[in-house]
Length: 436
Ligand code: ZN
Image (tube, rainbow, N blue to C red):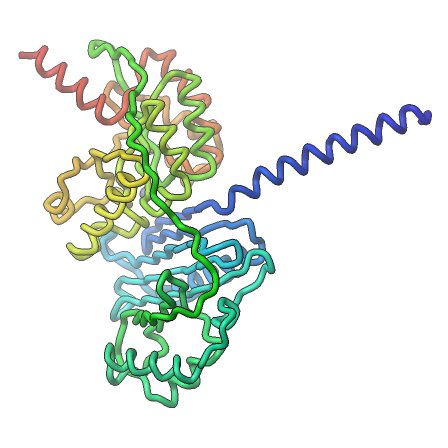
């Protein structure tokens, strides 16, 4: 290599280096993503939502905790066989993630296990107070610059706990659990909430007990999370649907995810729209993508808050799953879904009775959650498709995104027009009028 070339080569490396640097800086802004992992077998259903943050160490801790809970669940249910699908066991893990300030994140995983193998529901919460700069967990002392009177805090917490459940735990056992290194707490605006898991208790008690304690000890200022929502008016692109020609509705469940952005781009490039049945616990993390999706003319539907098995929930829990999602979407994007797609596609009268949303299932299942071969997903979404079909896909897999690129042109070739769930209903109504 001549000297001149060496210099040019070095310059090239420098440019690449700068580009990589810029790229990773851009990615750092993206502090976290939310991932959902859903499984369904003949004996159980499970849904796990967790954050993948910019801190690898934290991600690893979360993964380990999730794995341990999955193992515990499998150990509990391994000898059970069920004659009815409605008798299946359920594992649900949901997350909470809050950025308190540059140095403190609240992260929690909330686990529930229910089903025939559990005499009562198994609940637990696991919290991490994380310093992303130091890449480590911090204890109560680590979040304040003021010296803490730990024994006073301990007494207060014990008294509060006793009010909630007098015979849950003796003072002696409590003192063994609640030490300076007790990590199950979340920082709030007014202080701390300590969480006590039922498995710590001597008494039969299956709820998690939160003990909020007001403390003005914190020297840091919370990031003021002002909810500045400008009422954007969504004007979907105008389009013409010919009710005389065949229509098909593409629907995506369980998102948004890291793939949703590209999926809505693919839809836009092809000038088609789809309906996304979203989970409420992902709205905050993906609000910008959701807004763009709505602006592009896509429809959003409600698919519960954290993918609990809706047909197994109590009425109150069911309403909470639906309303929480409606509310967070309204607050963050101004959008109100019209349709509900119950989790695991199972509907009960209770669901019908307790929501004003219209129930929207599907007629064609691509099984993209199970099938990894892109061409097979494409075949399932394009072979034997009839006028008015609703195709089920998931915007949480890369393969589904890849399949979509082939599905759209193939269906267009067959003469299909792409409609959202609302448009499908409109087309059906128009056709009924014409029939009269
Ligand atoms: Zn789902």
